[in-house]
Amino acid sequence: MRILALLLFAASAFAQPEIRFDASTDFLKLPADMHLGEVSGVAVNAQHHIFVFNRGNTMGPAYGAAAAQLLEFGADGKFLREIGHNLYAWSYAHAVRIDPAGNIWAIDKGSDMIVRFNPAGRVTMVFGRKKEASDEAGPWTRVTPPRPAVDGQFRQPTDVTWDTQGNIFISDGYINSRVAKYDKNGDWVKQWGDRGTEPGQFNTPHSIAADSKGNIYVADRGNRRIQVFDPDGKFLRQITIDVPIPPNAHPWFGNQPSARQAEAQNGAPWAICITPGATQYLYASDAFPGRIYKLSLEGKVLGYLGGSGRQAKQFGWIHELACPSENEVYAAELLNWRVQRLTLHP
Image (cartoon, rainbow, N blue to C red; front, side, top):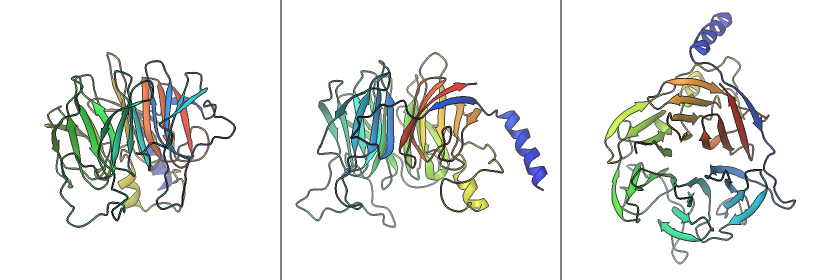
């Protein structure tokens, strides 16, 4: 049976080739007294500066900690600055993105806030509002049935993207199950989605990206799919990633998952990004078996790379991807407390 499994995997891998790649784990040059915590976000701007949103600089106990720190590095990996030190929104870092104008967007899951900085690092736009300290300020809880989403109020948001008109799309998130749309001026437009499994419904919309036509791609992690919408929220199609799990695959920690657990995790998108250029590609990652997948925008798997582990070229829960070009990918890892810079040789 094991030989048969290996033969079946080899045949499938031939159809969806493993991509050769190099990886650098130490290219970011931190000051001697600074350390990364869980790296939840990574982004790259037009000057090739690298922005890292991590759960470092932690103050307080594990519960209720302020675990968010936004750092900028030069193209050579040299540390340049910390952005938003002690910012009111900092609570629990989730993702960072750079918009076409070079603005820096930070999504903080703990404070339920999305903050835009200009390239100089000053706050220029704020979405959401965290609970007031004067109230009994506790985290949002999950109830059954879920509370209805409220316009303009976020509950554990996850990511942000923009269409060709500059409209803003926020995935929201762990408690809510929707996409919120604002215009380029920050005025509320609409929302779509609710918790469920039907097209247009979500179960933890965890990452979001847009292509050059303005179509919106949502990593619907809990439903093990990527859903694609037009800028008005019309459902276009869904993408599922079905590359067989290698026989020697192992999780980052714990025992081997059951067959049902493994299939539920395999290809479930934690992070997505779309490359620029005339021909665009979609990259997606999962937690187990811990791979990155290269896809066409139509959803065809063109190749895959990596796997779960602690060594270079292995990954511990990729939480965000940045892909400034087809063959250059940055992977922010929660469990390995690092960013890997990947150079692909397809």
